[in-house]
Image 1: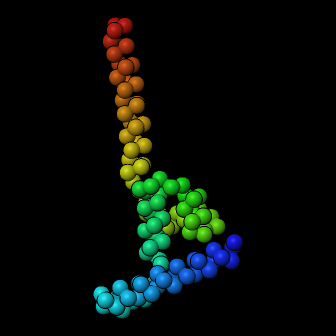
Image 2: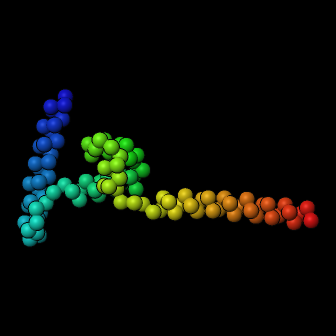
Image 3: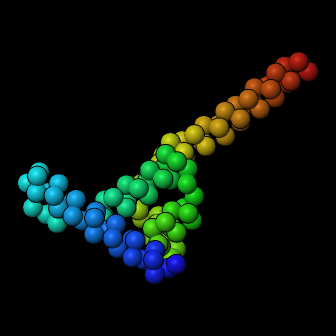
Length: 106
């Protein structure tokens, strides 16, 4: 099974490079085309738009550790901003309740 899979991956990569070369020539791009941007874009889309776990992305990219995968994924600040907003909103609600209870007691 592994040999068959390796052959399929190799066939797909050869197909990718043939198409990439055709596109590059059509657009007059002289630099060599690689899978570099495709892999980085795929990892970023998988993580930030599809919520795929870093471990699954690492496996898909054949990385041995998430440390390598972290380099591929563009940081999505929306996730961090949303988490911070939730904490701030929760704290604000609790403070408002506490202040109302103090006013009622006085």
